[in-house]
Image (cartoon, rainbow, N blue to C red; front, side, top):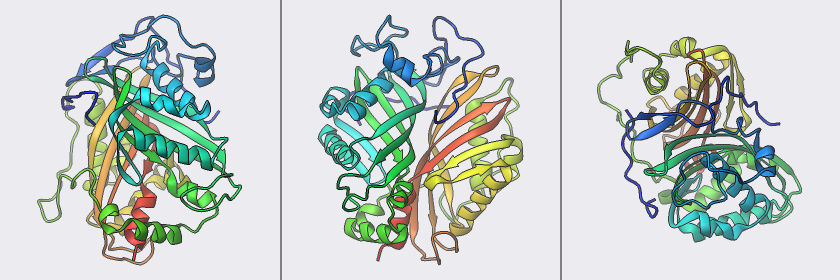
Length: 392
């Protein structure tokens, strides 16, 4: 069951959009723990006609309570899509001061960032490097309300040309195309916590740089203390404890999204029961992963998992947050924030074993139809993992 979140403002055509089979005039929701999970898609990008339609037709009547939010926003999807467009594409970077808490906590590939000033500086840096940057909203999953805070998982495709200086070097003139997922918690018009995964390794590769070389260089610049910081703590089950149990379906009536996701991830990643993929994933599965990976079908996904477990044989994965929207008839859209700790003791894509302890974290979005996962977007901080492995 989801844990209650005590929050204050100062604490911390790209993809396919599936329209709802039915849309109510008013959103419906169900309580799950302390949070509300939308039980339909009446407030969604699809119901708005997509991002372009939403941006062309701003305003209107409120579609859900938004205590403390600017009057121009009609629902939480409208808020997330339009502030992103205004900051990044209209280049109203100063609007960050109005939409992020001055004590905001932002976790990204390079660690924990504090405060809106750092967010402003990073945004200036990125837009300077990619002046024509575009962020195409592909999906926004939401949960919560205006009392405890809205939780949103914003999946975008980022496009642009590197015509300015970046932290990786002088302009290359290269064009880039990469995925990003940003999970935010907002209340009263302010984002006070954000976990954002850019596909940084894919970005660096598209700019024409050698990934291991760049990871070693930046890893050495940052120092071991920065890149080995276990930003979200150790995984729940530590090496040497009892063997992980095989989680079975609860047997309770109806489809339980959280039970299904936790059981699937635990059995595959912690129990090493890859057979679970046959039951939880569709035969025609599509997975878009970090560094431009694309997997078709369960066998390719299983091969990816095996490769990771072979490199990190003591790896243990833990889900830190999960929320969703939808119902059995229309399907579900799920956001999962996770972390994994392991030791680099096996050969693989990261080269010969180094014995380095590695901490990774990521965000996944999953589409469930008919009780199985049909699509998944699985991003993690792969460039930070490479820094931990390749640094001197």
